[in-house]
Amino acid sequence: MRLAIVGGGAAGMMASVFAAGRGIAVDLYERNEKTGKKLYITGKGRCNLTNACDMEELLGSVKSNPKFLYSAFYGFTNRDTMDFFEQEGLRLKVERGNRVFPESDRSADVLDTLRHAMKKAGVQVHLNSCVERIRREGDLFFLDIQGGKTAEADKVIVATGGLSYASTGSTGDGYRFAEELGLKVTECCPSLVPFCIREDFVKDLQGLALKNIAIRVLDGKKILCEDFGELLFTHFGVSGPVILTASSMCGKKAQEKELKLKLDLKPALTMEQLDARILREFEAAKNRKFANVASAFFPAKLTPVMVALSGISPDKKVNEITKEERQRFLYNMKELELTIMGLRGYNEAVITKGGVSVKEISPATMESKKVPGLYFIGEVLDLDAVTGGFNLQIAWSTAVAAAGHACR
Ligand SMILES: Cc1cc2nc3c(=O)[nH]c(=O)nc-3n(C[C@H](O)[C@H](O)[C@H](O)COP(=O)(O)OP(=O)(O)OC[C@H]3O[C@@H](n4cnc5c(N)ncnc54)[C@H](O)[C@@H]3O)c2cc1C
Image (cartoon, rainbow, N blue to C red; front, side):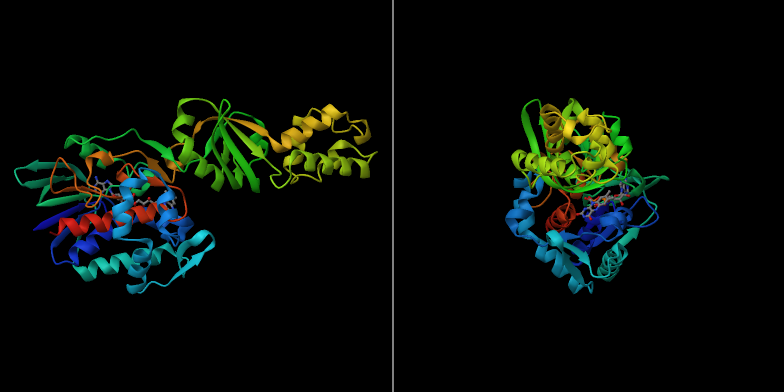
């Protein structure tokens, strides 16, 4: 029995270890000159390889088709991921939000661990081998490899990833393979990705990070998502953890139509409490200029923007500010409104939403229901989660499920 794995990323590498460990011949085809290029850049080079939360949270963090993952997640849990890496000699640590990293803070060590495990298990790695086509003839699969070679296999696991960060090798080939073999692929879009914002003033705020703010994304009056955390202004719009998470919940909508993003810059205070605080500040500095007093509320970069948005002259003495003007200043602090004009592209997206339809795949084995012996794992599937190590857990769990079944 020969098993071919197409793609040497997180999912493909893990599947190859588990399959070869069971004694079958495993050939892994990777288009790049080395395996795991994307894994190397994960977690800002530290690789957040899973999340040490409970199963409920693990499933809750998956935003597309969480039910499909029930079997795979129970079959190879986040604890199993940690045990696997530790047994292979990689020491781990758990950080804020249960995020699991290698103790060394080096994604290269995660990669070395996988590469070493692959070697030990006897995986045949074929680098610089871009698979152009997968054909099924009778009971066999034929893989056409760039350069004219053809490889033969009894079973094939497709682990080609999504469309994000194409420079790492993931250019969406797996979607084409799936369609050519008669499987459905759902519409894809970038996810865990920054938002483009219409308002020009965001450019003046470039580089400013706001911690502990609350955000809401609205379609008209309907709240699409709410969150709390850190936001980063960029030259085109907004990014940072709260925005990436929001993009995974309402990114598809944001591509179709204009949405509003509301920022609450003072979420710990109610409107009334914040108004009382503004009044106290104004009272204590009656004859000072508004711009100087306003600076008590914001980081330096944000003050001129908030002053301009209030419509109050920066030089106006605070004891001359009317109630309406004060209310506008207050309102902007609690409900600063930005217009979402769409998403940034795949080259800035942590993952791809959409992919090979899970309706076509058996959840316990990752095998195609239509084409026996053909499996899909990792990001190529229509599965995605928020940040925190969950996307890699999807890759590990689906890989182990497919490897276990493909060896039978
Ligand atoms: C910047 C960034 C940071 C991230 N950080 C984290 C993190 O800290 N934690 C987390 O959980 N997730 C993180 N992710 C997401 C995570 O990296 C992916 O979910 C994961 O890598 C998906 O694994 P995969 O094996 O399915 O795909 P990939 O890792 O993309 O691997 C696919 C492989 O297939 C190869 N390939 C593609 N087509 C062919 C072909 N035709 N022939 C041969 N080979 C082919 C590619 O070269 C590639 O090596 C991050 C993503 C990015 C972009």
